[in-house]
Amino acid sequence: MYCFTVKADTQIIKVGMSTALTGNAHPVGNQLLTGSNVYFDKLNQQGGIKGAKIKLLVKNDGYEPNQAIINTREFILNDQVDAILGSLGTSTSYAVLPIIQQFKTPYLMPFSGAKQLYTSNNDFVFNIRASYNDEAIEQVNYLIQEKGHTNVGILIQADEYGLVVENALTQALAQFKLKPKKIARYKRNSNDIQKALTLLKKSGVTAVFIVGSSHAAATFINRGFEQDFTPDYTSMSFTSNSHLFSRLLYPTSLMITQVLPEPQQCHLALCIEFLKDMAKKNIKQPSIFHLEGYLNALLFSTAAKHCEQPISKNCILENLKHPKKKEEHFRQLFTDEKGNKKLYRSYFKQTQ
Image 1 (cartoon, helix red, strand yellow):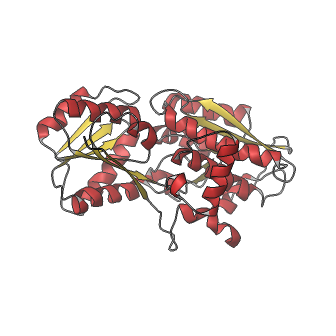
Image 2: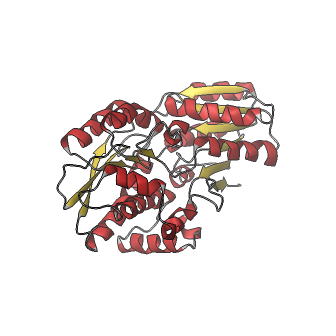
């Protein structure tokens, strides 16, 4: 095990977040950031961690891997952060993993369910959310077992995220001895979906797995309806359900898998505390992504409370991976009693 301490001021715990504040993924990025800020602000007002305040440093990567690399290097080399928290995206995470391994910087709770971010090979990565493989199984069960579809297609964002989820969906479909009839791709960070729509419509599929941003998904679903293409849809937790639902103009059958429950429907103590803290900040419609950002900050802070100053990076990781018994309730939103990852569903079902 690596043993070293950070060189930062012991009165400040620096945390870096590279996320999408612009671009197609900005609804998710901004809400994750807001949720984390709400918790860190509250903690700092209460005195921080053993007298040390947490400083959240934020850089916009626009959901682009090259910018995420630049941001991550600046966090580590210039800002000397203790950890990187809540980074958004699979392609961006894959791009920065070599830097994380090189500098042995904790890469905590990235907003991605890519399988590579859960492997033991990545010693400095910690992720608590359900994986895309978990979500793929849930979505395939929904469309195949519950809805009875056998003729399915996939709309894929053309990047590492799309490839990861395509593989997960293909594996899940194979359990039913099925393959996607058509896989259509569109360019990442764009709404250029017409070619993909034409291909999927022509294929005659009756259900479509959507793998992409809420902007692209809304464009696809709305334009599909206008062109008499109305399959059943599913989408991944990467999609902002509130952002997508607000942009759907027509009757649509859509299910989105989520790694957390809707905050207003959650009655656990942590959800109640979260809603109170959001209300104090005058945030009137707290979302799942606000909640995930909040919990990311809470989990990091709880682990850091068990570490001496200056904080050891290994101490943070050790306490995240092996939490104290009294803190297991933090994880009940993400895992069941057997330690399996939990999944929740959001539905959009509108009729004329």
